[in-house]
Image (cartoon, rainbow, N blue to C red; front, side):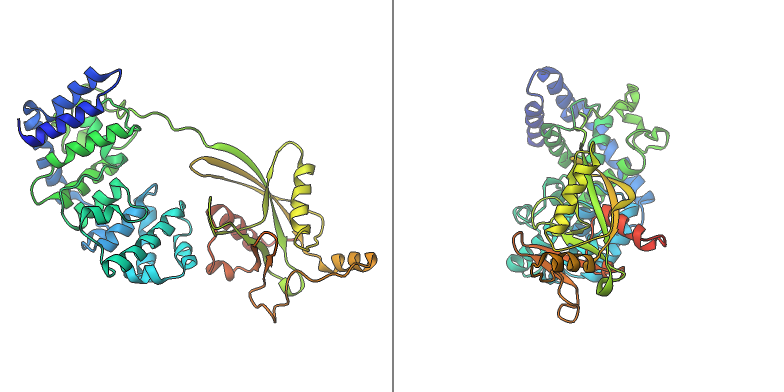
Length: 427
């Protein structure tokens, strides 16, 4: 047995530890054992023949620029290829080099990411670009330890960069790859567990033909994306069907084994579309989220947590939020309901609409004899119509449709605002 096979076997034993140890060990032994050599060689050979003939023409495949490959891999996390392509083109046009990305205002970077979701990816991408400028003179490093040290780069992304851009025989194990390997080698271990992924990472270097790391890893991903799909694998046109143990055993639809993820926690929210008047005519009130946490530093319409049972109580919270900022408004009425699912939270957002009425607030203040200082500075003083709340440090502003082209909104709020600005039936 070769040292490579022994190393992989040791990894398999580690993966097989636990109650099902004997079964798991036999699986990994079978995969790396001598009797499986023909199956492994067949898999690698036929996979590359198919890829050379059938690979998709994707923009990041037209060259091996490490920066382009890195950006595409970050974008492709949790996102379909068809969705990514136009974003990739726009992003590269706006930030053609790592240095351009590193030196750009973060708000510009997040704005270019708007619609892709998982916005921490964009912020980490820029932070890593700044690392590369500082430590590697703006050039993507090719050393494994340096790539792994980049912000937001985990085992899969590092493996993809090293193999695709630099043709190094590194594993790049994502969901597509785990699905293909689970079916082909009949691996019944839970792919949601890190130890299963680690075991597969140990297998892949032994499958990569010399000098073909870049093509092999892309071919493996391509097979999972196009043919060995999650619910309806196209076995009859699969280039490696002949030795696929999952197909032979009739288990291709049962594999891979994966523990179901916990359902997102439902949350009710109540939001306000506050139309501006006077100098704010044609604009809507928005605020910037905190610099850390969910949707960090992005803009949104004001909203509060809601019990969903007593709308009156929820409206009082919303009114207090506006009152604290020196605002007055017309009666609130229902406008729309919108929903959005994050990885761990599902928001159901009821949106109310009202119109700013500064003259009403001024009249109330005059009647009470209390001096009143307008919270929103005049546009001549602050053209962007921004104002801060001193106690909380929050930033608020009035936005027009044109402003939305410049600042970043999460998908949920972008949908609400676009619906509003396109709607002719406003208050």
